[in-house]
Image (cartoon, rainbow, N blue to C red; front, side):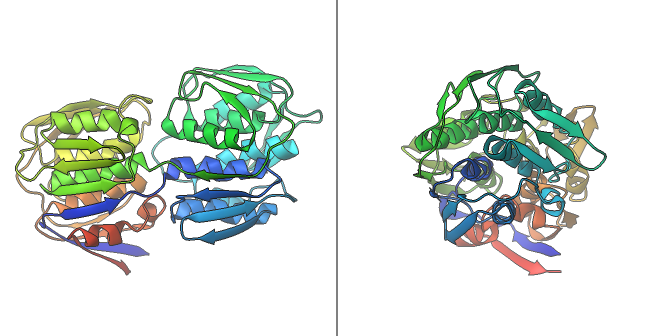
Length: 419
């Protein structure tokens, strides 16, 4: 088990280079399965979810070479269609591999995915879409088998909810499909746009990514490509919130502010001074009081659910009462109990919480329950005078690249130790 020891209370200052996007890297890595030719990806973060995906690719028969943030993959010989259960259990995003394997081999076997326990997150939308594309789906007690004897067929698919994972799986499964696939009520997240751009650079024919209607015309083959993964907008938002919580000045590099406008607007509403120039963001929160605000999470371009726990932690320092309503995941408030150990005043009522700001949180021993909840605890610890101990930081390592190292470079007192 790993833990963070954080002695908070320091003002932070300096530059932070934001890593490549976790949520874009995973489906893009899955896309390599579709291509029998070598592909090279840049700006891929060194995080556990990426490492899990690479392990699966190797088991499937792909050759993987990594040097820093550059990954070259050759999937000329994909000789397995089964995703190992023990690796599937480590990350929710492994389910995205299913669409790519079906697209390449017309069959796949996998178990229910693991990852963060933040809600039910069923894969029914994925499987219903597969069935509309002519794929037979057999759900067993511990695994799901999907296959098509005649290949994937283009179809019109109307999603009941704009699911990011289902949208990505449909895109991946339909690249080689006979005919044209239409996705209505598609998710519009920037990571989906990045996946479509990557696939199009290989020779796929995808239009409409970033809108609620995506059109995929099946192609016969793909070719080699080199592609750079987009910056991680959630890591960007995390560091902006950390600057606000610690009353600091930070310069964030390798960012795309347009992907994070809902977060930036909320921070400005809270009093942050933010300047944007090209692919850089400057935040100055050194003399500002944090104002209480209200937040409702929504699918993109609304306020991202992944930022909700981090803002909740930040709002424990605000003047007055704030309210957050969570509309995406029903079990995303588990972190509140951990913040209460630090004397945060948070009251839960159904799918919303009310936060009353306090002058100072109290250092304590807390534990990560999931990836973004862990980031919320790191923020709280950095803004609190004294030493906070955060257990189970393996969750954080799944999605943040070298978080402790980046924080130390800007003046934080944080250690990653083995328990």
